[in-house]
Length: 356
Ligand SMILES: *Cc1c(COP(=O)(O)O)cnc(C)c1O
Image (cartoon, rainbow, N blue to C red; front, side, top):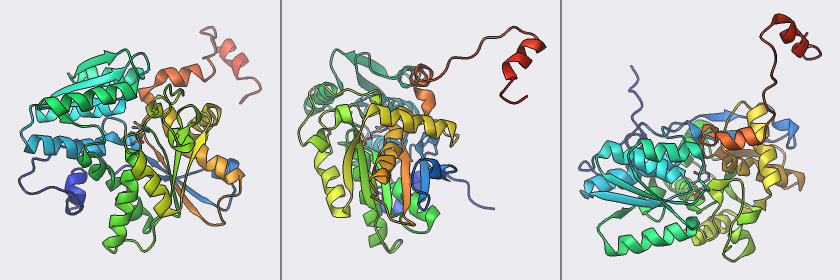
């Protein structure tokens, strides 16, 4: 019998900074679906091979679980009493879940009024101390950096190197499934930890002889929150893709490095372009991701229109989080249900011209 899947520390421990002494705190994260797009020809040139890495299938619904299993396992190894993070939502959801399991207190700082409902519910239900500040994500991140410099609390934002280590395993999975690295790997960029992590993962897999080539990394920021594209911090970042509403990314330099070393690109996409991709992924691909996740595909559509890709290129888009986290965005941008009488004739009238 095949051994059951036990999470990514068990799966990829050889590539991770763990020892036999590390208590493994896991929710069996990772091992997420890599799905071939079913209707890619409708939005990009048809001789491309497009895949989605659906990270919404992780236990708390985003890729943050990959970094968090490692960050919380290492915090437990150090006998930490408390962890803290600033979050646009998903980091707090993940940190609170893994902390609950590890019996470590979790404190989360979230920006006022801009966090998706599902994410807030997660932090609360897992028992974290949730502090909402009257500032944005960048303000919250500065506060947690300052507090951990003074007090014995472990920071679990992606400045914590264990977060990046855990997140790099997504690149391993892509290569294991495809049997090679893709030609391009596209993802949304917020605090820029994930693009940093994927690039590290691909390079380590190549060094280990598991793949022969490296992908070009494509990062996409929302136009209203595009500091790396603009070349300067954005004081008041704005986008409906709240998970990437960040004006001064912590991993700015390493994201630029990933772009330059891989000969890739970091570009911006408008909220309209993100929305179009978000709807396409849901209505044509059957995958419900959150708005920020769709920035990866929005960017690929934009570049395809510019004839950026070549015949036969394989492109993987990471869909970073699950759409259920943010039902408001889904409802706000879609048609309302059609109200009818509870009668067969009313049903038939509604179906006329559609399927009868
Ligand atoms: C955190 C997050 C991002 C941004 O990732 P970074 O590592 O901060 O660049 C994008 N999408 C979702 C859903 C996220 O939770």
